[in-house]
Image 1 (cartoon, one colour):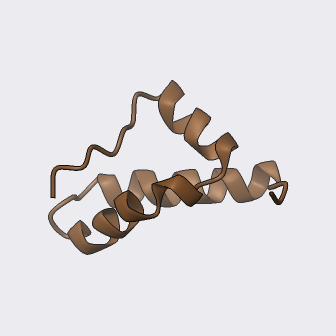
Image 2 (cartoon, rainbow, N blue to C red):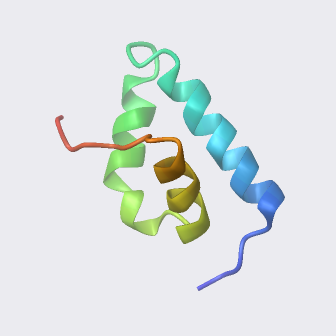
Length: 59
């Protein structure tokens, strides 16, 4: 598995937080993230867990 830089992780993290700030507007993007969560870098998953951000499958 590829090693991600902290800058890449931070960039992805900020994008996810921005999408979650308006779930109605970004519903399709959020659903895409839910489907691909297993491919998310481990470092990013850990950072999201630290902030109590989860993606429950409630489509």
